[in-house]
Image (cartoon, rainbow, N blue to C red; front, top):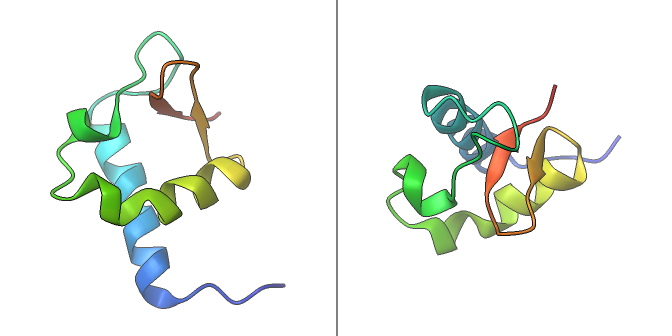
Length: 69
């Protein structure tokens, strides 16, 4: 199992929390990273990529995200 730095873990949890708070639970309700209230979306791109890679969140064709089921 790969080690994930605690700060990256905290960032990923924040992204999941904000997507959940925005009710982004399907492709139809997906939100852009800047829409969910992240202070610096570019700073968190690595965390977003990791969440997509792990299948925790999904990305739409127009760069919006939602929590995978």
